Image 1 (tube, one colour):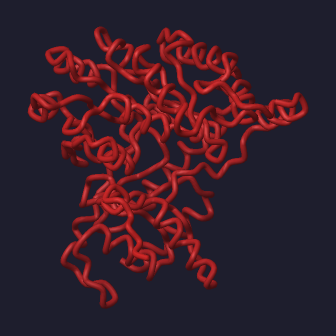
Image 2 (cartoon, rainbow, N blue to C red):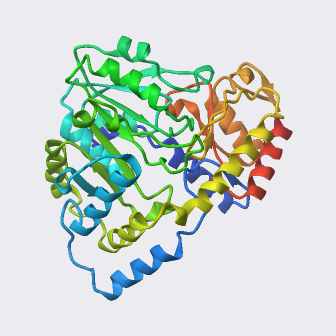
Length: 394
């Protein structure tokens, strides 16, 4: 029998971050000493008070199907979190809990987009945005930005990218992969453009909001005129080190939330029961409970910038959030290192994997072909060793 995969799956890109992580695991299994700086996964254990909440949920027999859009108690905690941290009033009917923020994004794309609808993606963007849009039969429209503008899209660039087919704009702040953080003034500038185009909706991915060194996070939904046309996406993977617990959520206009619930009811149903109960404890707790992780990420960022700054050919900005640096390494293009000619960021990332035993991710996967992404969600010892290896081979 022939194997007939759908065109949909054949045309989909493999996640570059997961592919590099898989390659690193394969090389480790062969006995190579690989330092992985490719995954966006905190290296901390989750705080004990969250574990205790999960244990209590098991003891209290939270083992049945959950409501498709999430436990009401969790949605109350999410609503309180939006009010406390973002100044946003989302009712329970505007909140949907999903199996990770990635599912939240997929739900929104499938609910809002029709074939041919265009989605503006300031590049660099998170690796899955483009393929999620394509799965919903939308058209990703990349707006290139560079290190000289801190990888941020300007209002002029946004205006120039809008066409009669533009339906949405997706972005993250703090940004994965660049770590850039949009200020209130910068978001207001984008909002002024969008106000002239009332049929364009915004997805604001705020999964890194607490890992922020810029002095405060601003949600675009809080900008005048933007609340009713913004979907605010968040989750607990990054700030609470709960990547494997798979809980994400949205605050959105009610019609979008209802659509996401309808779709989710046919795909995954409700999110994990024990994880939801644990997230109630996480979101209800004061942010001081996770400040130790944020402080450590801040220290690591400064360390990585100092060490990479000693390597000729690495052009750096100062990321103000998340846990990535996104250096421009285009100065190496056309050069030959240890017999390997570097023609692209992918070539450079593979060269580092082969010769330095350090796993990074090519910027091409994020819409920027001149950069690589380096995650500093690793110990100081690993970071020092990894960058020493990189320096030695370039």
